[in-house]
Image 1 (cartoon, rainbow, N blue to C red):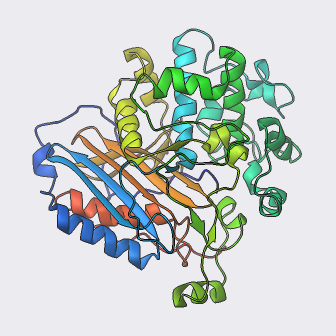
Image 2: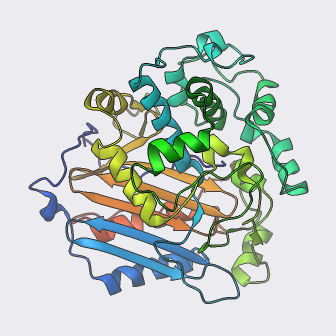
Length: 415
C-alpha cells in the first residue's frame, strides 16, 4: 500500500528475544559482521536486482569496517546512467518516521501529550474523542485507510497531476466506517499519518515542510531531503525515474499481478509505466518526502541512536513498540513511526520502509553492531508481486552478518 506498508523483516529464529537496545559498537560487533568485499557485494546486489527486473537500485551500507555503496542498473530506461548514494528518489512511507519525530518533539516541548484525543486538534474524525495521538502513531486507531479506496487509485490514473489536500484524502477515509474500536488491533494505515500532519501544523503553527526543514533536515545535515509543495511534481537533480507495471492500484492495495502481465513482463514484451511525475500530494505527511540513500542513512542512525530526542523522550519513543500480531510477541513490532525486528540472535534492526508508484525502499539501523542499511529500487513491484527493496533485503543481510542464511523473500500469496 502506498507510501507503503512497513516491510516484513526476515522471520527470526525460534526462541530469540526481541528486547531492543541502543548500545552502539558493542564488543561483539566485529564477530557478528562479515568482512565486506566491495566488488562481490556489488555483484550480489546486481544479480538480485536483475532477477527482480529492477531497472536501477542502490544499497548503501555503513559498518565499523567502512561505507559501501552498490549502485546498479540505470536511473532511466533506455539509458546507462547508474544511480548512486546521492541520487534522489521518493522515499514514500519512510516519511512517517519524520512526521512522528515532529509529534514526539512537540510532546517534548510540552505542546501536546500522546494521550490527547485527536479531536482536540482535528474536527470531524469518526470516534475522534476516543482516538489518541499514541494510537495514531502506532497504527491502532481503527480508522479506514484512504489508500484502500478504489476511487483514489482510479482518480490518480485519470489525472496523475491532480493536487490533493489532507482534507481531501481524509474525506475519503471518513466516508467509510471504522475498521475496529481504537486500541484493539494493529492495522498499517495512512489515514493516521495524514491526521498527524494536521496535528503538527495545528500545534506548531507552521507548515509541515517548514517544520521538517527547521527541526529535522537542517539540524541533522539532510541537505538533499525535502517535502515538496503540493503542486510540485518534480524531483531535484540528480534523480531516478520510477517505474511500475500496471495501474496505481497495484501500489495502493495488495493486488496480485495477473499471470498474463507477469508473463509479458518477464518476456520483455510489456514495459513498466513511468510514475516519476505522479503528484504525491495525496501522501504528504504519510509519504511525500524526497531524499537520497546517503541522507536516509544519516537520518535513521540519528533517530535510533538518540540524537533527535532528549533521553526521556528517546525512552518513550523506544518504549512505544508493540507486537503487530499479539500471537507473536517476539515478532515484528511497530511503535511511534518505527518498526523493530530481531532476525538473528546477534542482529536486530530498527527500520521502516516505503512503497509508492515508482519506488520501493528500506532504511534500518542495528545499534548493537553499528550497522546502517538503506535500499531503494526504481521499480515498485517485481512481476511476481514482491516489493523490490524488501525482496533484496534478505540477500543483503546474508552478506553482512556471520552465520546468517535467510531464505529469499517469499512471493506474495494471491488474495
